[in-house]
Length: 89
Image (cartoon, rainbow, N blue to C red; front, side, top):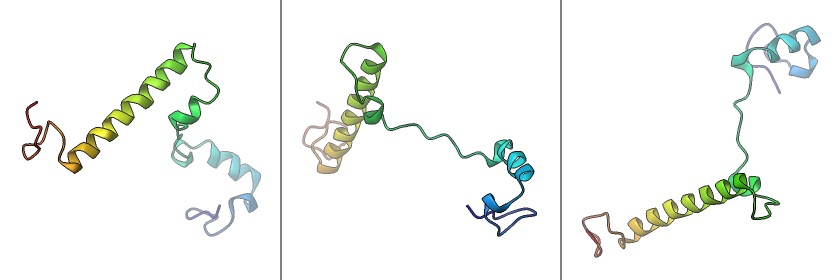
């Protein structure tokens, strides 16, 4: 990674002094935001019995329902849009 700031701007992070690397890694503003693993990967290996696995499975199902509802709106077959044939049902 090439640094875009500071005393070592333009240099590769791995080529900077160890003390600078240690200091930089301790800074909250420098840390990469934590990215959560996609739900389907969290469910990998679930045996169908644990509560955490069930919660993840339920979350995936809810996401799929939301996506299908959006698709229905785009196709005009939902019950929420006034111009839909199913409006108000």
